[in-house]
Image 1 (cartoon, rainbow, N blue to C red):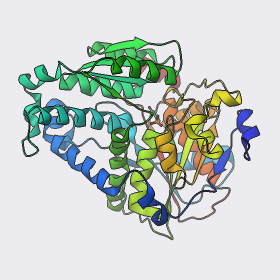
Image 2 (tube, rainbow, N blue to C red):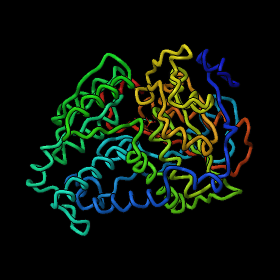
Image 3 (cartoon, rainbow, N blue to C red):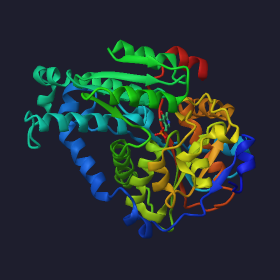
Length: 415
Ligand SMILES: *Cc1c(COP(=O)(O)O)cnc(C)c1O
């Protein structure tokens, strides 16, 4: 195996990789294992659940789990000054840190898949019809029914937080298998909600493997498979799709002359991949998506650039997969997602951990926005791409993937 940048990746250097396989979305889209129809179905399902969400999480207005977009002009100036570089065009931030219930992008995929599973069980057992008002699912008889089923998931923290929280609310038994990277407060918070948390001294792939094996032994247990799940992907894709209306409402024009560049922090790939796919469905080639990964965990970049997908891990090239970006501490990418991104992703880049903290502080000082370290990985994107694209018509959008649930004392240490 060899490809340009391999030596830089091995040396844990910051790099940007532009994807030579990129192909016009019109040519690619019909050959993908997912379709617009799938995303629309997911969006409709979330609509059916909105009366339920509203009832059990009254803070979710309209029962639709969505986040705003912020203009961050001051942050843009700060970055230009600190890097002594121009960023051409405007800079905005998608606020998935504010997503209700889970405080991270995982509120999109995780909640969607759990609700879909609950719906399937209830319908198959004759307890629910598509036309019903789904707020009945909050009734005790449903909770009792769901309590005979188990949900399991492997996680570096946030997926567990999302799936644990919604599963416990629905009434499922839930077991979260946490990798060594998972932050203590995430485990504590879950336990306080009655979720069983199993801790591993190994990395994410191992936690997933163990969780999957345990779940397979129990016919009433359902495993949410972050490495392969189409349902998780669909939940994320709905978020990408909904962005279009939000940008229109902000009167931000996206077309051939005014492209959208999106920078997405990437772990196993489901979150950024799903969002990117939803964006591509809306904007085709007028959106260019970039994944951001820690220099010690460039799993997706390695899988795509080598063409080996999940047949290679960052350990295979001598990296340790150790990063403070807990949400991105993944050594082996999803092959399901990698194959979708193969011709649709414009590029990917890596970022040193210390820079996550620098961006975290800058963003807080300039905009009073707090994100968790993983969520800042995208901010190096506009610095990188502005070396190649000097076009004032670009809208750069960083996807802020998490932060609002970080406890106050930990926040204080970070800002
Ligand atoms: C999980 C996560 C990501 C990446 O999502 P993947 O599906 O693992 O690629 C990015 N940021 C945060 C904060 C996350 O929790």
